[in-house]
Amino acid sequence: MQSKSELLAEAIRLLPEVRRDILLLYYFLDMNDRKIGEALGMIRGTVNYQRMSSLKLLRKILEDIKNEEI
Image (spheres, rainbow, N blue to C red):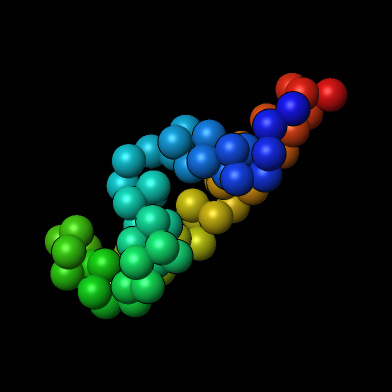
């Protein structure tokens, strides 16, 4: 059985690279959508949309991983 942080790390690794980068920059480096957009060459609205949809995808991946362990 994996710990919660191991599960989260695995789920984050499974995200597409751009989505993973957006989440890591936002949640771990405390960058806002505007700064992330500048760093990745995207407009703020796109970053916001990608971040929100990435969280939904991350939740689904976590659920799938948990269901596989049962």
